[in-house]
Image 1 (cartoon, rainbow, N blue to C red):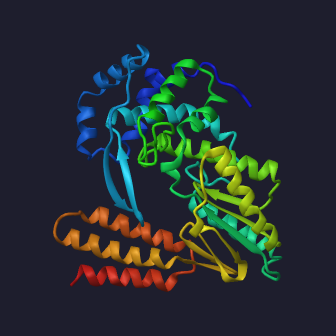
Image 2: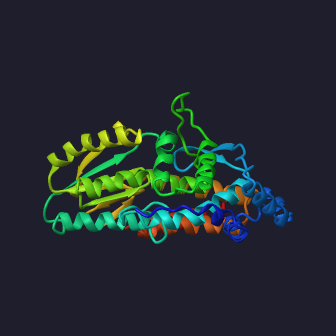
Length: 349
């Protein structure tokens, strides 16, 4: 494993901070707090630089709110200055850790994502089942309250195996310790906030420990993961049953995580597997029923908002196209037509 001892100066360089600003502001230029920061951009960036250079920077508090995506999620949003720094850190650290990730990790990575993850699972099911001529089994697992459960000490120890720069380590400690979840105790601080770009990187770094255990210690060939959602495919159901205990023991002992008892299952391939919003079946895939219902509900709500002049036509059309894009990755031609028909009905009635 390569060690990095001189990355703090790269993170806090003015070139990197201004570059981070350009990345951060994309699709946010209509936000009031972003506009206010940009009004005195150079002053704000130079102030951030001086705080970092003088080692006086401290991460600020978070604003919290809830979103349905599709389940209720508690989002914590940092102020603009802190989020620009998150991007600056991400731009330097992500390429470093990216090279350590396995190819079967699909979350928040360039040229990866949900659709490629689902296609990969389709591919390996087809391979193990000999093109669906034999029954194979899919172990599907999910971590219980993953983002709230990430142990700060464990995360910093993992980061510290690669980052040996004292100032960079202190900065990472400040970012990690800026947030604690309700699961934290006096002796065990945990949680990374949904909303931080750094949390995407930290989640992949944290779960990469499991990936390496799966691939190199257990020598499991057919595996895929997206954040805390992962599957193992095998011809042997008994082997997968025994594997559950092995993986759960590793997660508990090494990462202080637990698998969700209601979200661990072993399914026969011909019955389909629910993965990343799609039901993967032999020869085709469908969109999860909850996803279908959410799409129709959201389009109806957004159409009503448009008619009440609370949403513009452009964002409404973008939202519709994004839903149709999700449907295009499954065998859902009729469903796509139904959604478009409903959209035009709601627009004209």
